Image (cartoon, rainbow, N blue to C red):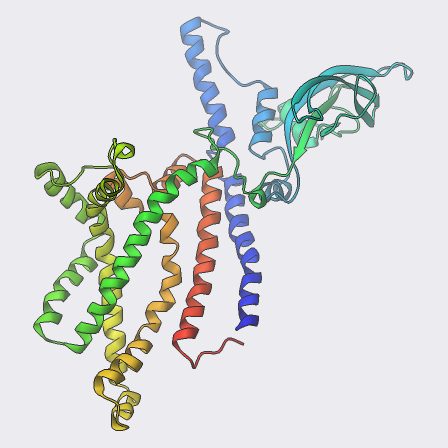
Length: 452
């Protein structure tokens, strides 16, 4: 078992890399990405500006702004470099300052530009210090403070070929210009120099960047939604297993009785009617017409002013209708799975052998048959852990619950790729962990299974 679990845990990084690499690649090639949206917004602002201020007005992006957007969205680096930067394996460049410098014809007087750099002093306070960028030669550039010392945390380099393509406008189509060599300058003889800072800021540092649409930290947005989805996910799992497993046992032991027949009616409803459709009906009659339950939301507006027990009551009052919608399909599937599995085990020879050796029928059923019947449920238990964070999109939409599912859906629709990548990463990680938990539960329930 130990060796098996070690192998499974070692496969977690491989699985996550495979999933995120595929999604990251799609975000780079799919149309309508962040760069296109920014360009479209600027174009619309430009048209509005011309119509309101006359010719010459507007807000179209300059080449420098395009370059900065490309850097922010990882489009100015190669695919593998941007992916490694997203993981936090290599350092991310930040606080770029660009300079176009003409090489001096006099080697004794190289071209230089002043620059102001934010540097922390011994007390940790950020100070602005004056520095100088010097173009030593066509292949060498130097950055230093006015006192001749090296600025801590700051670096300088020539612009990359991709950055020069953006600056020269060669990504807009038309005749392609010769490739730019960062050591030989751009199409003109000027050298484009970049001053920047470096830091590790990726998944390994638990930094998922900023939302493209809201400009908020992605992790802060996820943290705000996690308690909501975890609340509904945990209660759904708890109530599903608490109700379905005993009911499945009862239905198997009382097969073709009135108990079995009456409970099957609810099961057929759960199978046939989607949860969001049930939610719409319940919302219309019990919330709108009868005014028994809140129409939407996770809690009341005055939740913070309530006492402890009043808060619990308020949460349950808001959660009643969504939980009914979530429980119906889960209850139906788990109950029938438990019933059918137990009925198969009741017909096995080992049960009759146990009774023949002196064990009571009740003891044989609950000590042997029920334990073996829970194994199929245990195989799916780990996969249900993902519900604790992924949420339930359609039910969240019906009841206007700001959960994880709605966040993911809106991010996909709006092409908010940092949120998409973060949610895919977290969902994949929990799914892999859940599968390992399922394997452990199956091994504990079935002594015949040995992981070698």
